[in-house]
Amino acid sequence: MKAFVPQAVLGVIGLGILGLLGYGYYDTTRQLEDARTELAIATEGAETLRGEMEALQADKTTLEEELAAERDRSEDLEEDVGDLRGTVRELDKIVKTDPELLQKYSKVYFLNENYSPAATVAIPDEYIFGPKDESIHAEVLPYLKDLLEDAKEDETGLLVSSGFRSFETQAALKSGYRVTYGSGANAFSADQGYSEHQLGTTVDFTTEAVGGPFMSFAKTGAYNWLLNNAYRYGFILSYPPNNSYYQYEPWHWRFVGKELARDLHREGKNFYDLDQREIDKYLGEIFE
Figure (cartoon, one colour):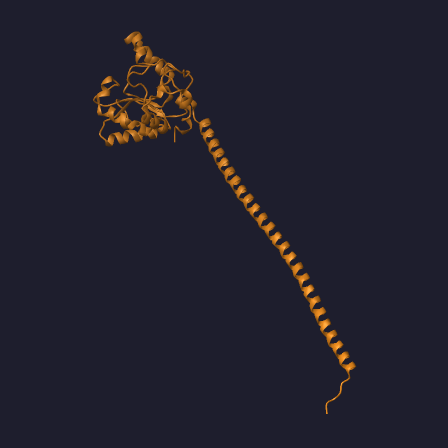
C-alpha cells in the first residue's frame, strides 16, 4: 500500500527545495561578486605595483645614467688634474731652467757681462785638443761625453778645441782678432755678450789632424759624423753654410736639448731660422 502524501505537504517541500536552491544561487552569486571584487582589487593592486616597479626601474635607469655621467665627470676631472699637474711640472721646470740657454744670440740678443752658467765643470783631458783646460755647463757634460765616446767608437778622432768662455775672455779674443783681421773679424767672431760660448753650452770641435777650428774641419769624417749624429745628443750646428750671422763654422756646435735638435734635424731647419717664441717651448725639455 503506497503512502499518501498530501498535496499541501508536497507544496511545502517544493517551496523548501526552491528556497534552498534560491539561497544557494544567491550565495554563489554573492561569492562570485566578492571574488570579482577581490580580483578587481588585486588587479588594481597589481597595476599599481607594476606602475611602481616601472617607476623604480625608471629611477634606477636615471640613477645609472647619473652615475655614469658622474663617472665621466670624475674621469674628466682626473684628466684635468693630471693635465694641470703636468702643466705645473712643466712650468716648474721652465722656472728652474735658465731662460738664457735657448736665446738667440749672434748679433740678435745680448748676454751681459755679469752672466755665467749656473755651474761649469772641466771637460776631461782625454777629450781636449792641446795642453789646455776647457769647461762646459755641468748639465751638458753628460751629453757631450756620450757624443765623444760614441764618436770614438766610430774612430772619428773627434776632440774639443774650445768650450765655455767668459765675457772677458771673449772680449780679449775678439780684440786679438781685430788686431790681426781688422773689421773682417766680425765675419767669424762674436762680440762679447753675443757669443754662444758664454752660455757654457757650446763647443768647438776639431781633430788632431786639423788642429785649431779651421775650415778644413768641414772635409773630415768627424764633421760628417757630427752632421749625421750630433742631434741625437742635443747638439746643433749654429752657423751652417749661407747663414745670416757669421761665416760658415763647421766646428761650432751648440747644445739645445735632444728634442729641439731632433726636430730641427728632421725638418731640415736651422736654430736661428726659428722664431724665439717657438724655441722657448723647448726650454722645459732641454735637459730631459
